[in-house]
Image 1: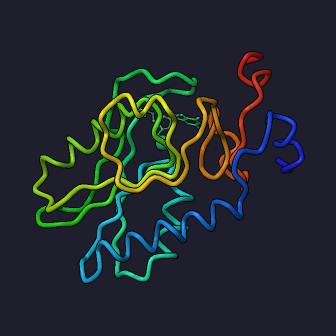
Image 2 (image 1 turned 90 degrees about the vertical axis):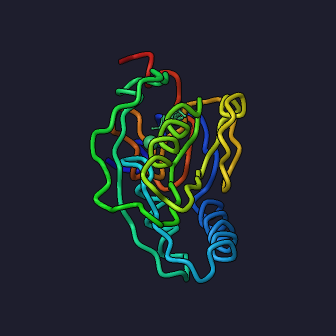
Length: 185
Ligand code: XMP
Ligand code: MG
């Protein structure tokens, strides 16, 4: 798909590629300061966090390890179901590890509060969260997210790993999906 086609499906560009890059660098500096001398395990949440994970991991000057989890709370719609299922679990033993969950977006907060609680039972030293985006609804649930990139309005966004029905993940900016896209399907 050409990016010009993707642009037709967007209401507006919310965050540009350059703004994302600058923010990831800013988050990386904070993480480096907080985990200096530690052996950090980044846990990426598939599939949306793939881009954040790839860019954040390369921006960090710390020695890190990466592992991945896949959970499902959404299906292909735009509403959180509140039901979290593990589709792929970690391969890493968390005992004594400093864990940083890397997420694309926190919306209702259900997925991440569940995930943190789940990983918290596996003997890790610490479990913190880094989310590139946070929607206002997440503020209602007490999820302590240590690193947040951008607070965004309550709209459905795509690009930079975020999808609608598996599309738009490779769009380089983050944009607000035009309502005609999901009302016509
Ligand atoms: P909750 O509500 O549990 O949801 O915090 C987190 C997960 O929901 C997905 N999500 C989105 N995906 N654009 C997307 O492409 C969005 O605007 C959006 N809002 C929530 C996402 O998978 C996230 O991990
Ligand atoms: Mg996700």
